[in-house]
Length: 277
Image (cartoon, rainbow, N blue to C red; front, top):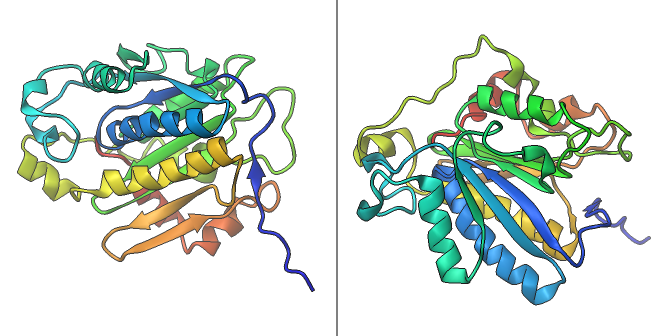
C-alpha cells in the first residue's frame, strides 16, 4: 500500500508574474532579522519563479545602545530610525526600492492592502489592534505571519484572515485564533525597555531572534517559492534544543486538538506570545 502523501497547504492562484506586497510591522529583534532575510528571499524568487517581493517596513522606534549586538545595527546608527536605517541599507546593497515608514501600524500604513502581513511586535495589544484593523474593510491580506519570543523560546505562525465572502475549507487560523488568550485585556504587556547590551542579553538570548526568523523565512520560501507548506509554524526552544511544528488544521475549530498535540496549555501559550524588540 502506498503511504498517503503528506498534508499540504497550497499557495492560491494570483501570485505569479508580479511583486508580492509585504508589510512588515516591527524592525526590532525579530523584524530586523526578517527584513534582511526577505532580501535574500526576493533574490531567490527572482531566480526560480516569476515572483518578487515589494516590502514596506513600519516601526516607530530608533536605534538604542541596548540594540547593538543582538540586532543588526551599528554604533553609527544610534538615534536613527530603525525602519529607515535598515531599509536604506538593504535597498543600496540589493538595488531595491523598498519603502520604510517611521510610525506605528496600523495608523501609519494600510496593512489591509498587503498580500502578506508579517508582525514582529512586542505586545499582545499591538496584535489586537492589527487584528481589529483587518476586520474593518472589504480587503484583507491573504496571509498573516506573526513572530513572538521570550528569553530563549518563541513561536511563529502563518494564518489566513477571514474574508467577508467566505473562505475555502481548512483556512489557516491566524495568531489571534490560535492564541485566543491574547484577547484577555487583563494580561499585562511585557515590553519593559533594556538600557544596555548586557541587560538586553539578560532578557533575551543573543541569537533567539535570528533562529526564529530563519525558521519563519524557510516556511515563507516553501510557500512563495515552492508553492506549498506542510506546517503552519513552530514552537522553538533554544534552551532545550526543541523545535515543534504547528500542524495544519484538520478541520475548522480544531485549535484545541492542535495545541494539545504540541503539548501547549493555555498558560504556556500565554507566556509565548510576547516579542521583545
